[in-house]
Image (cartoon, rainbow, N blue to C red; front, side):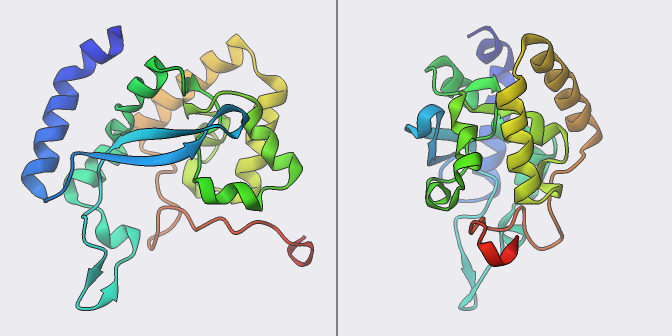
Amino acid sequence: MILIVLLSPIMVLAAIAIKIESKGPVLFKQKRPGKDAKIFTIYKFRTMKVETEKDGKPLSDMERITKVGAFLRKMSIDELPQLFNILRGEMSFIGPRPLLVQYLEYYSPEQMRRHEVTPGISGWAQVNGRNAISWEEKFELDVWYVDNQSFFLDLKILWLTIYNVLSRRGINNSQDDTMPVFIGRTEESD
């Protein structure tokens, strides 16, 4: 609650900037799996145009990101509405990032272990590469966190999160997209 009150001026300015720059809602809402894969609605500031096509051609995520959205992402301001998810007990400050519901069917049993803890705004995978690492690396880091979770590890992740936000490290995977779609691992890809 204290952080919501303290950060409310930033959230109000972000909402105004989003509305001025492009049409559509201020908040992006999406279903995500939480602890024990229980589904909840995650809240973020919208950073992309509502339109998904231009001249009949689909736009990539990078083409849809607005100027305001790019700034919000670089500074991780787009994540601030998740403080309400924390207040509701659906998320924590630190834990594996909640991913898309459709990915659940592709997880190996080991990867599914990431749902043994409450998801977080930041996590071990985020401070060790964020979107610049592969899905396999991300899941290995998430499971490592599940096995090694502690108050001091959470403090380390919090410190590294602040450092990464200020240095703008690992935000996008490539020039084309924010992170490729996860389609699971097969025996052939091992």
